[in-house]
Length: 401
Image (cartoon, rainbow, N blue to C red; front, side, top):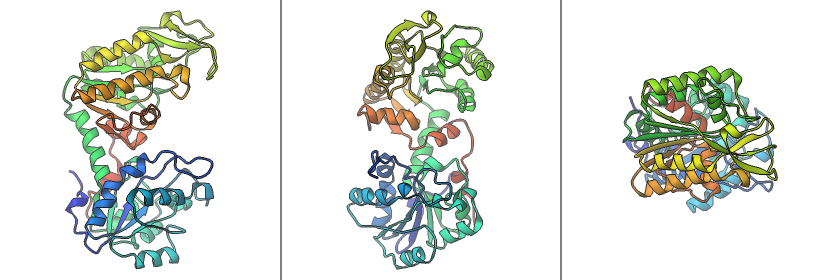
């Protein structure tokens, strides 16, 4: 069952509360350094304005844990959003209280009000009913467009939905769900999964599910060394990171891939160094050539080529996690190569989905934003959805009052 889409609501003259995800990076001067999540919210905002609604936006930023931290104010977001929508964005000094209620009451169709950081109140993450009720009292209609927090059960995305008859998913939330669910349930084949990142932990359920549906699984990043160390491979990987408590799980995934005839590909070489540093002396070595004082910090050239050959033949690709420490120039090539290849096959007609988090950050670093079919705005949410775990915020939109 799918919830209503915002397009299905009567919006003329209504005050619409929109839960967005404006958890964006700020520099030391308080300027937004990456506005991808803000830009991703624009289709819903513009649609609401075109329909004659008054728009009340709410989000969190960082983890203030119930304290008012000026450095985590959404004021910089308000300024950036105003430039993007080319309209005034009224900024509230709080998200609840008499002054906020007054601003919301005076808000006219076509106007935008952005509330201050929801997490300046501990009641937000605790999903306290009274806080939910205060937020809900500001508007007539509720729209959730914050995929990045959809795996959390907080006041602004779960608790307050109980107080609305008219509630729906925004354009971004629906797009995220549709892309990610279709990738798992109905992919155009061959379906290839590229998995990376530092740890296997947190991706256990996802890997098990993908082993049931993928044609190819390519594993890079730090997590690859746990697989390389697991039976039946039992490779010596030097001082590379290995999660000892996940070795049996890795072995089980290897066995499952064999049983399901899934092509599981692990690195055959890597870029190694004796320290985790931008200035470390690096060398390209086969996995079997790693000495005890060396750690793998990126996939090597042979591995890149083997991954690229498989990607060239793929029709659907899901990428989650970098191939190495891409933030450091000596160890960025593997991640950059995969990102470029995904953009290339997208132009050739493949469906390419990037699962948010560090993978999305890598696309941005290498100037490849927009080069893939879909980039998710939610790292944790995308992992849980792809793992088959119901998202509380999405489920909350389905229930009747």
